[in-house]
Amino acid sequence: MRANERKHQHNRRVKSHLRHLERDYRGLLAADKKDEAAKFLPGLHSAFDKAAKSGALPRPTVNRKKSRLAAALN
Image 1 (cartoon, helix red, strand yellow):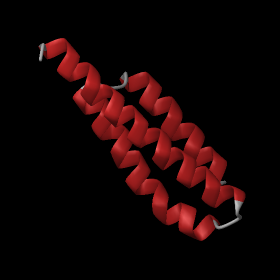
Image 2 (spheres, helix red, strand yellow):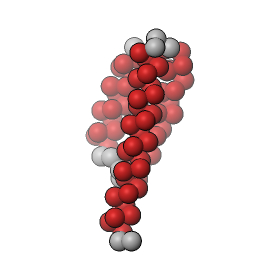
Image 3 (cartoon, one colour):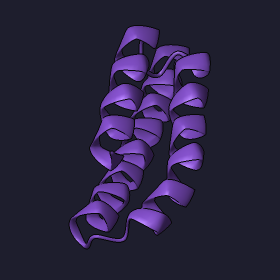
Image 4 (cartoon, helix red, strand yellow):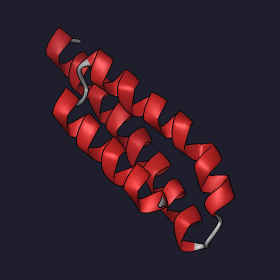
């Protein structure tokens, strides 16, 4: 497998995982479970930071998403 295809598959896997985490978090907010969402948020931030570190997402995109997710909690 070519390196770019391997990286592409890795990035797709990471982005899909992040979408699932974000969906779960927003589901907690929609169900008015703010205490559970508050416990979930640091793990979500960590996952986004790891995605930026690996290059799957650009750092500004990660910062914007983290900010909006935190604002949704308040």
